[in-house]
Image 1 (tube, one colour):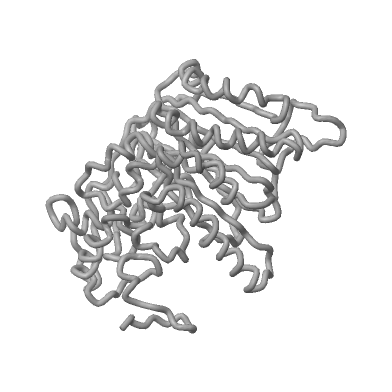
Image 2 (image 1 turned 180 degrees about the horizontal axis):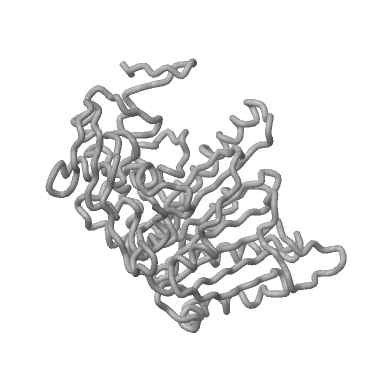
Length: 399
């Protein structure tokens, strides 16, 4: 079943799902937390689960819910994928569908002499997101100093015969709001459009459009469920950024550090789904989700790739830059939050506290109860600190 589609022909309800339709809504997406385009409105994927059937390490099958095995129910609802048992079925919430209004914003420097103005506008948008999400907007964005492919497309602006009209330096986002008119959506964004206006045509190319959709499914098909190309290699890291971080005087410098130099081809991706129901579900006693999600507005992802055939030294240098420079800069900006395990830095030396927060001790006890022999393992899952890999990839217990 496609979670993003209505439940049957003409049905008024739908399920929560991931950003891409190829991502299943049962496995690691849900068990790690699970964000999607409707998460701000309905909550994270983990918070949709009402009941689950789970195969334990001894081969038995149990049902986990608030009344039966509530500790296991807590663990599989955001406490990490595949480490407590194998989830074979779930009962999840269905939500009413509704109309949507989407805003698509993009901007880019008119030429390389306006990079300072470009960064000012990037900071402005980060400052704006807590307000916009509190008003009901949510979505996804990305930006880069140099992208291998164009980020911003200019169809109606003439820069001169020697200027490119598709920009590999740029910022773009698509944000949407449920059950509002285009006029209301524009009014919510108006204060920030006024702040961007002095840049438009002077230092930046700025384009903004609004679209209306009768249902969530039509919005998703048009603007959200577009699969990314596969087959590339990259190192990634992330941090959940709260309102304090997004309003910090340190933000500008942090963004400069994480995007690096143009020669690094760093991509910064913005998951703008915090606040709303994601925050309200923090009161759920059966949620094993990293508590940092409940105060965050932006899940900020940085990524760097390498060309095919790159040697180990090149790859290791990029991994080190992600862990020790870019992720560390985000930790310095938001020291009290954490990271989303499904899109986090797998080499994070503090992964247990960053991925699981204050739930780590409770989840570790549940792991020992339901999988005492450590049948289930992944490198950054609960219980993985009891093991280490040797040079051949073989697992050995830590003495």
